[in-house]
Amino acid sequence: MMAGSPKQKLEHAEETETSHEEDQREVYLKDGRKLTLSEQGGDQLVEIRNESGLVEVRIKLTEEGPVLQMEAVRMQLKASEQLSIESQAVEIKGAERVEVSGGKVDVTAEEDVNVESKAEVRVRGKMIWLN
Image 1 (cartoon, one colour):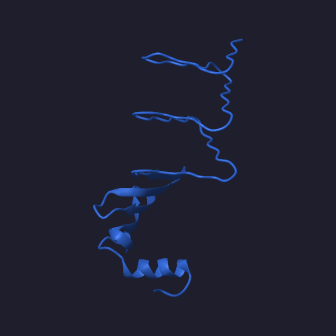
Image 2 (cartoon, rainbow, N blue to C red):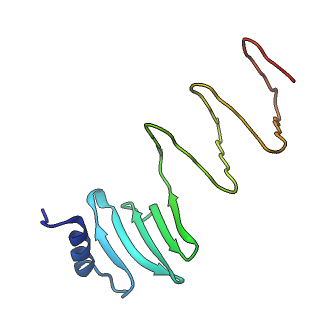
Image 3 (cartoon, rainbow, N blue to C red):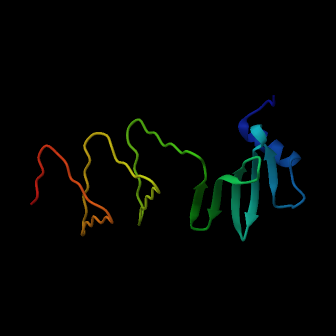
């Protein structure tokens, strides 16, 4: 077990785990995972790869800001108070199903709202109000 703060541990690991390339450093983690710090086209990369070498988490530090990429079997986000997503565009794709559930569900738009389906569309409720 290493002593000192986590920052000191990483600095120590960087010095001892440097690869053959000057601008890439590797730290070996449990279960065969590897943390890699490198540069690619002027951007800095922080990656965690699995034992097969596939990227599980990548943080690319660009001039425009950080870009986060994650690939996993499952991902979970949990917030005890609120989860907010704000962006120019938000896209959610589910190959088999997309589900929204819980308490009250509100859909509000400043522009048109379109509902399209290649199959039937069902709306069920105690009371359905249309305009």
